[in-house]
Length: 420
Image 1 (cartoon, rainbow, N blue to C red):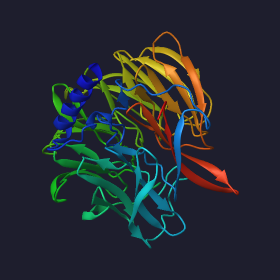
Image 2: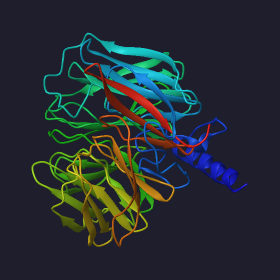
Image 3: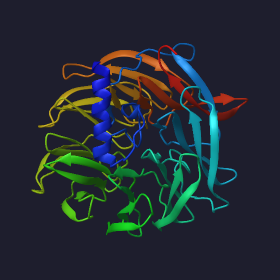
Image 4: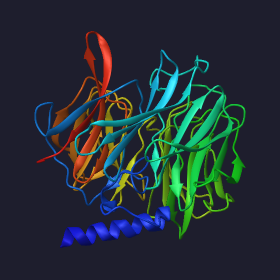
């Protein structure tokens, strides 16, 4: 009975956030967009396994063509992935059956475009995660010096497609589309002058657009309920800025509040917005999200690619080089710092009572969160490399990983869970 109550509550949350008219019966067991339902990497009501390997607690494994760093998008009875082919120069969307892992369909959206010579080795042609609102898929791809947004039906039919704006690649594109009521939000910072914009999900009509500074930058925007209002918060370009998600109005901005280039998305807690960046300086910062412009604390910790995580008054972070941190969110006081080892691109996720952090080497560290010490519960290995953040839904973990087959890299999608 308690589980049913939790799922009803989560379904109501999805109505509030996404403005959906119809929800599947398992609406509370989805991972519909980048970093989950609330774009914060937290699903405290789930209870996934804490131990697994290639032969234990892997319910299925299926081959994924091409390459991409987008997270699996889980909705209803399906899983959706974006993928790219570096040789054919194509960008596609794939759909898999959630229960068996069987590939259901693939849809190529772009092909034959000019190769991006500036694409970073830690980026791909398909790094943006797909957003699903229960009726359509919203997919972002960058090619031919422009960002393109496509709406697909759940069967892969193109509903509409729009060139959102130009894009001068520095190291490629990585921002994911974010759902807000009947809108889809897109950010595209670049050296020729970036922008953050909102489009109507049904028609692709541009509802609002705000210009951003001329600077390469990579984070996905996030919508946060903070300081009593919904805010789209975006880090990078040497500032932290917030916009009204309904109108695009600039709510506040704080200069010199982040580095020039960021990758991780903003997280919030207790009225504060937290961000970190990696170039040209190293910095993690906490800013009041009330428009006062007050910088509450800052330090010289570089959390570049992974996003951070808040939980019960503490800020958790993993650096690209494998150093794990716990800070007191309100003050920035360092509670502990420990080296996990490895390289990290994916972001930590709180699922149930544990934090899951996956390294590039394919090792997922399961941690019991707390301010006293780093408490590693288990280490779990899948594949030879993992760049995408795993997705958590319905007590299952969906991991996009690669293995070497006949000397070549081959991606797979794994379903980790207990039972059938």
